[in-house]
Image (cartoon, rainbow over all chains, first blue to last red):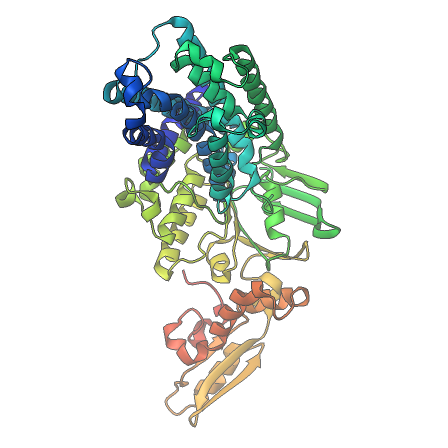
Length: 267
Length: 326
C-alpha cells in the first residue's frame, strides 16, 4: 500500500482510538462546547441590555475564545499527550519495526486532528447559532480569515504538540501540557477579555500563538468597531498570519529535529 | 543457503564500558536459535543491533543479507519483531490492530488465520485492554508474524505465562519453525530454550561463551551422571561415567530386582548454563534470580521424581536421561 493509503488507514484507526477514549473526548473535544454553553448561561444577565438592542450576546462574546481554545486542545494537547504515551508504551517502537513508512504515522495524526477539530468547530458554531442566537459572519472575507487562522492554528498546534511530547513521559505529560496551556488561555483572551489583562502580560502572551488565534477569531466574529479594543487598535490580520505561520514552520522544524521513536534509555 | 544472521566482531560501548565486545555469531536460515545470558550480558544490545534499532561501534552485521542499520522498508517487510514489553493499543481490538499492521506488508498472512493460530479467535473483537497477560503476549506474537516474516525476533516471549499457556505458545513457535521461519529467541527460561531451540548460544560480558545444541551445550552430554536411590530408608547417590553398569549392579543387589526411588540425572541445561556464566555474574545480581530458582527446582527433583519422567529413567535408556521428551 502507498504511504497515502496507509495514512488514511491510520487516520481511521486514530479516530477509533480517540473516540473510544472518553477522557480525551471530554477534555479536548467537548470541553470548549460545554464551556461556551456554561458561560452563555452564566453571563446572560450581563449582556441582557446589549442583546436587547441587537448587540453582543454572551454566546457571541465567548465564541471566539472557545474556538481558539478548541483549536489548541484538539491539536496541541491531543498530539502532545498521545505521542508521549505512544512513545512510552512502545507503540512507536513497534510501528518502527514494521515496513510502514514513517510519514503514514504522521498523516494519521494529521488526519485525526483535522477531522476532530473540524467537527468541533462545526459543533461550536452550531451550538452558538442554534441555542444562543449568535449571528455568524456573512461575508466571504471574514470566512477566509477564519479558514486561515483555523488552518495555521491547527497545523502549528499539531507540530508543536508532537515536538512538545519529547519534553515529558506519559506519567508527567498531563501536568506538563495542561498547566502551561491553561495559563496561556487565561492571559491570551480566551476566558478573560484580553483588554483586562495587564499590558506586560499581554506582551508576554503575544509571544505565543494562542493570543493571535484568539485575536484572529475575534476579528471574524466580533463587530468591526471592536477592533479599537485590541492592543494595536486594529485586528492586525496580516501580522496574525505571519506570527501563526512562523510558529507553524518553527514547530515543524522543531518536530523534525527532536522526534524520537524510542523513549530515553531504551535506544 | 547463506546464514540468516551473520555477526563478526560486533562491538558496542556505552560510556566506556563495552556492552558487546567483539561478538561473532551466525544464525542459520531456518533454525530456531536461543540466545541465553544474564541481564547486562549484551544480549539485548546484540538483538537490537540486529533488529536495526541501535547503531554499532564496530563489526560486521548482516541480517537477511542486509546491514540492519538504516535498512529500509523492503528489509522490514521480511523481518518480524516481538519486543520484550509492549503496551498501547488498549483501545483497539486484536482484529483491528492486526488488520492495520497487515496493510504495511506486501504479503501478509490472513488476519483470521493468525488470530486462530495464536488462540485469540474468541477475543478477536474485544478491547485489547481487557486481555490477560498471556493473551496480550500472544497478540504481540500475532503482530510479529502477520507480515509473514522470514526471520522472527522473539524477546523473552513467555515471561509471566502460566504453564499451559507456555506449552501452547511453544506449539505455536514450533509450527512457525516447521514453516521455515528463522527464529532468534532470547529467554531466561532454560526449559524454553531446551524445548524450542535447535542451537543455543550463551553470551556474557559481551562475548559468546558457548554455542551448541541444547543437549550438548558445555559438553554436558559427556559429563558424569548421578545415580540416586533409596536403601534402608536412606537416600544414597553416586556419580559415574557408566550409569548403566551402576544401575545393573544395583538391580542385582536388590531383593526384588527393583531399585527403590531410582533416578539417573545428568547436569541439566540450567546447571550447565549457570556454571558457564558463573564467572561473569555476582551472586546477588537480581537478573540471575530466575535462573537460580529454576536450578533449585531441579535440585529438589529427586523428592518428586515420579512426577518428572523427563529426568527419571529406567535403566534401559539411562544414557538418554537428559534428553527432552518426545
